[in-house]
Amino acid sequence: MNLFITLLVSWILAGLIINVLTRMLLKTRLHSIMYIANETDYAKGYLAGSTNVKMYYYSTGEIPDMAWLNKVDHQVLNTRDKLEESLTT
Image (tube, rainbow, N blue to C red; front, side, top):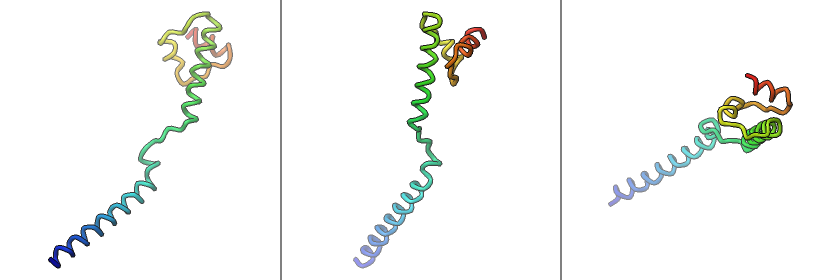
C-alpha cells in the first residue's frame, strides 16, 4: 500500500510538472508557431478589393469578371492611370 501511494504521488507530481512546462513553452512560442491573423490585414485587403471593384464599375459601368479580379490581386488601384494600366495589360 505504501508503494502505491508513493507511485500515485509521483505520478501526480510528474503530471503537474509536465503540464506547467508545456504551458510555459507554448505561451512563449505560440506566436512563432502559429500565425495569428491581424485584423488590420483583413481590413486592408477588404479596402483594397472594394476600391478596385468600385473603380472598375464607375469607369466601365460593368461588374468586373473573375479573371480581372485575379489579375489585380494584391494591388490598390486608387487612380485612373493605374486602372487603365490594369485594363490594357
